[in-house]
Every structure is written in C-alpha cells, then in structure tokens.
Length: 491
Image (cartoon, rainbow, N blue to C red; front, side, top):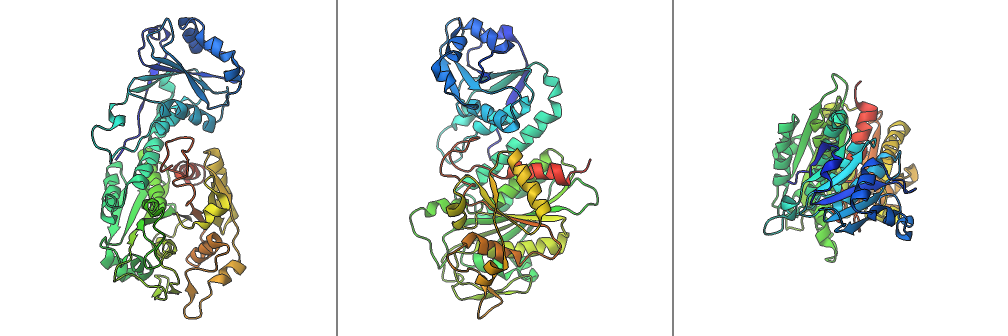
C-alpha cells in the first residue's frame, strides 16, 4: 500500500537557496507583505517575486491558490511557486496551501519555506496529502516512487516534534483509506481486505477476523445473505485500540462491500465500475484505526467492518427473501441493491453486544439519495443524540470535511413496514437516505449514542478534492480522529 509522501523538516538555511536546483515554494499573504525567507528569494530572483505580487494576477488569487515562476534568473531553481497563505490562517487554509505544493510535485526536489509560521505541521500534512498518487495498478516504475523529495524549512524544527509525528500518522491513515477505496475488486477481495487489516497489528492494534462459520453461529444471517452469491467469503474484522484505560470504547462500524452489482436487483451497466468504492465506509474505519494506533491515542476505540461482495449468482439472495438478523428481527428483502444496511445492522448489533460502547458511529456509501440531497460537498449525518452529533459536526468543521445533519422520524420509519416480516429493507423512492437511516436505527440499543454517516457523495467525489487528486478522498479520517481527540481521549 502507498505510504504517505514524507515531508523532510529541516532548519532554515537561506544561504542554501541560491544553489538549490529544485522547486522552491514560498507563502505570501493576501496583502502582499513578504516575510524574511520570501524576501531572500525575491532578492535572489532579482525582484521577480515582488513584481508578481504587485500584479493583477496576484490580486485575483485566493488563499490556497498557487502560481509558478519558471527558471528565475539569478537562481539554480527550476521554479518558484508562490502560494497565497494569510497570517494566522486556520488549519484548513494551512493544509490547502500545503496541498497546492504537493499536488504539483514532480521528479525534482521541492523545498517549501515556512520560516516562523505557526502550524507548519499542518502545511506538511497538506503537502503529503496533495502529493498522494494511486499508481499501484500502473505498469513500469510508479511516478511517486521516483518523485523528488519534499522538504520544508522552518526556523525551529525541534519544536514541531509530536505535532509532526501526529501529522504523519494522519497522512498515513488518509492515504491508507484512499488506497483501499481506489483498489479494484479483483485485487481487494474480502480476503485481501482482511489481510490488509491484519497487517495493522504491527502498529499495536488487536485484529480479529470472524469467518463465515463464526458469523453463522452468531446469527448474522442478514450479512451472510448479502454475500451468499459471491465466491469471496464474507467476513467481519474487529480492530481494537486500547489506549484509554478501563473506559468503554467508541465503536466505528464500516460497510465493506468490496463490489456491489446490486445482486439480483442488478444495477445499470453504466457507472457500475465505480462500485469498487462501495467499501468506502470500511476504508475510513481502517484509516482511522491506523491513525489512532500510529499516534498512540489515549483512547479506547474499536473498529468493526463487514466484508462482503454482492453478486448475482444462482445462490444469490432474491427479492422477497426473508432473513433474520442477529438482533432477532425478521427482514423482508425487497431490493437486493439495498444491501449495505443489512451488513451494517448485524455488525452494529454485534458491536453493542460485545463491547458496550460509549458511542457508535457507522459509515457507509449507503444511498444515491444522499448525493441527490447534498451533492459531493457534504456527508449526510443522522443521529439519535445531540451531544455526540454536535461534537462530530464541530470536529468535521474544524477539519474542513463537509457534513450536514439530516432528519429522522417515526413517519419515515413507518415507510419500512412489511406485511410479511418485522420490517422491509427499503421504503418508497422518497427520502431514501432517511429511510435507510431509520432501518439502521432499529439496530441501535436504547441508551447508545449513535451517528450514521452516509458518505456516498464524499468518498469518491466527482472532481478532485482540495487535499488530493481525483479519486478516493479519504473523507472522514481527519474528522473522526479529531472527534476522538476532543471527546474520548484521556488527559
């Protein structure tokens, strides 16, 4: 899997800039005032930076925008990249500025001049995320392997210490999620996904994989029904990080449908190739667990992912089948393409039975309806508890990851009434993301604070996100890690 591109932090050495042969990135506030490192670059480039900053082109730029001055006279550098970044910028702006540097990384070395700016670790995080490339499936030598080193000069590198280590942990978590979501289903089978998760033991996570026999014994027939038409065995992986003493854990539950044809209720051919990302919820859970373990979080967190493949085989589940959940509810399967909720319901119930969590958050690329509602800018947030919901929304806003609370209500739940079973797995065409959330709420025990995140629109947005290339975004890793820091971490 792809390791997040590393940013080498070094002490500011302005005398070395004249002979630096790569690309130099400088940060200039909207008011155009140059700090000490930028003034040195301006002098070496015979005033080129100041001339650009005084131009109409610079006046039209916004924070995070960047432009390049190629082959500046008086310097060995192949380019000076000017990035707009205001003083006292927040973490989101710092990351976007760093991503502007990382996204344009080529084979030449990159050197960003952060000087005495606060939040240099956030710039470095943005550089790492912006420089990410998914090249696992390309022939020949991957470009990222031969790309130039990314360095950043700061006045006092020693003070970054823990902050830089945490930034690298987060970058690795996001890139791990992106890799998992980007991988095609022939390479990321349920078994291969489980193996990737088992590899996280080296970070100190406890990892357990429940096979079909164990799932059958537990009564997870909703989950098993989804995968019964596939040659890939269904599994549930359990990842535990115990860094918070005796406190009950936060449970993260992810939908891991490695490919979704829709089953017998088969999807249209156009766009079906995108269903390699239907394990996006499980991918986010994996990335968060990697991050909290890598930074040795002082919290108890358990991640559970249901790994299945939804295929239209002769053994596949049919519309009209009735299955019994681990909870004991009977479910009439009206549409086999509404399979993610069947997977999540069983895993959510198991998480509560086994771990008695302090809170539970499930994540899933669950409905196209949420994309109709919110587009690709926000995940849908559904919750039974204002406290945990507001804490998550605050964390998501702080990390620049779009999230919008959606309603729940008995009138929506009534749309799932079945004449033959306790509940059916779909309602009408109206309010589809809400009725899906109401289905999941049946599997939340009284007293368990719960959030459902429908990430169908944000897991793999239509255009490149601010902090990375087109493809999997890694949305949710940063916000959930922030929630863990703010609400569940001891001390």
